[in-house]
Image (cartoon, rainbow, N blue to C red; front, top):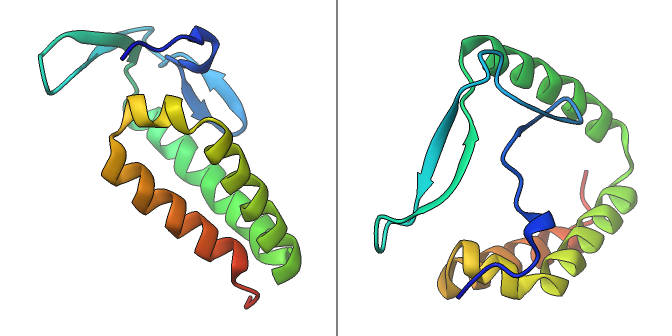
Length: 115
């Protein structure tokens, strides 16, 4: 199976709401474990990028906690819907078992109304 929409393939790191290259500009290959073929070259991130990502995630967690349970459920439901819309792409990236487990987890989270 081949990825048909190459706009979906991101090779940069997503940190603090932005797609960025690693500070050093280096990349590292992502290999298909089934055959060893290169899928893509992605940003190689180190300690500094990791610290920025952790700090951004901590800030995002505070924002997430401030949302109501209903708002979080709606957000997760929309995420689930998008996953299902692109399930053939995700199947390419993972595998059928992983996609089924992930879709069930997201669907369950979207139903949860607790804080």
